[in-house]
Amino acid sequence: MLKNRLRVVRDVTEKLTALEAAIDDALICAGDLTVTVASGRQKANLSAVVAQDAIGLTGDALKSLHEARAQMVQAHSAFAEARDQMGLRTYAGGNFWKPPHADAANVSVVVNEDHKEEDHKEQAA
Image (cartoon, rainbow, N blue to C red; front, side, top):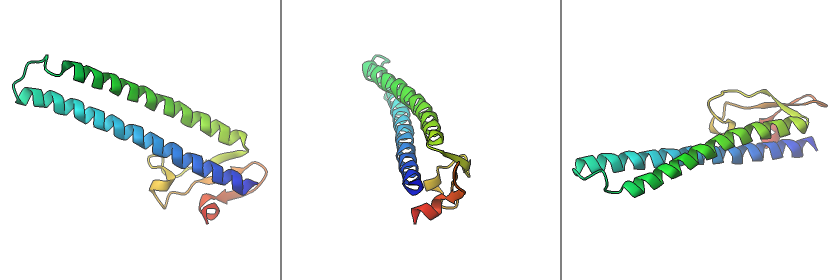
């Protein structure tokens, strides 16, 4: 049972981290597009009205991406709470700046309230 719970937590964490990264990538692309359009307009010596509707729509999409990112941060906290409700909690999360799958040396240790510490690396095997 514990092994299954740990596997679920690992799988959800992996998908959550991937979604967060995808939103960040989309934010970067939208920002790059906005900069490219604005600088391109200046380089081509075009009027500010050229592509204004497109830039406005891109800005709307950028705002939506910011909102989606904020919602995923809230979801991340909610998932952490759900993990705790399952009787699991993070004991030593490792490097704060990198998700566990991005750094092989960064292995989270999970504590089950009814059992001793178990290492994610052992569960993955």
